[in-house]
Structure formats: C-alpha cells, structure tokens
Length: 177
Image (cartoon, rainbow, N blue to C red; front, side, top):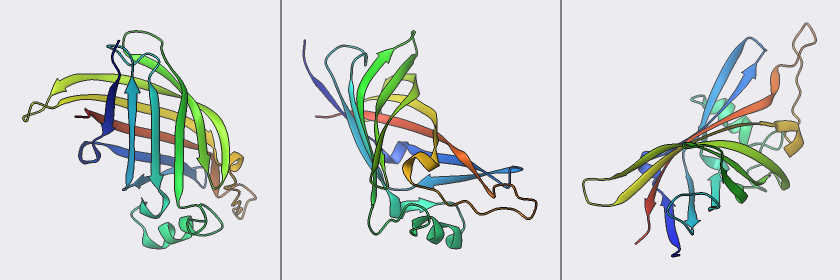
C-alpha cells in the first residue's frame, strides 16, 4: 500500500457559496484564493485525508460594497480571521461515485464538525500527462453557528439574510510529483 499525495489545481477549481437574501432570492459568492490537498492510502479515495483553506479576503460577490461588508467584523472579520479552514476526520465511500466528507470546519475562530457530500467526477490525464481527478463537494452550514450573526430585519420583521449557507466546490486534484 503506497501513499499518494494530491494538490488542488486552482486553475480548474472553484469554491462558491449561496445564501438567501430577503427570503426571495439567492446571492452567490466565490472565494478566489484557496488551497488544499489530499493524501490517499488506496487506489480510491476511501479513507483519504482532506485539507482545505480559503483566503477570506478573496471573497467576491460581484459587488465591492458587499464584499467589504463581508470582510468586516459584522461577518468574517477578515483582519482577525483571514482564513477559513477544513480538515477531514473521515472520507467514506457511500456508493460508486459518492462519499461522505466529515471534518472540522474553522471559521471566525470557531471550529465545528460538518459533513459534506463529495461526488466523484472521474479521473483523467491532462495534455501534459499529469494524473487529475475531480470532485463536486456540496453541503449546508448554519452561519450563526460560526459567529456570523449579522441579523438585519426587513420592514416586515423578516430576516434580511438567511441563516443557511449552501456550499458548492468543484475541485480538480492533481497527483503530486
């Protein structure tokens, strides 16, 4: 059994989040700067160790004023907590193409266990002969559990911002040399 290391290919990966605004529409954001990888002990990813981090200052919702607000103390507090990090505790195969990815998510200085779904997209060699594989990772977290407690109200008394954040990460991994 040999250990294989994989690194996230940022040129062919993306990390997005979605949250309800005024309960009537969804706002999408992206983190432009991130890194991560995996270590496997088998031919497949069952039991792999996964780690990932996001640069909070790279948040991009296509609205500069909103991005600045998200970096403030009312949300991510980027000056104090510049990174969102994830480290797996288990990566278990559910069926041929799906895994349960469980681990510790740290955001704004708060670490909590989360479970995400990882759908295996396949393996291929790129034009340079490098081994690549893809996963789409999805899940949902409650922002308030991580200290993102901003809670402006609408004129009718409803929350201006939903509590659940949907995560969508399309990740391409490259086998490390």
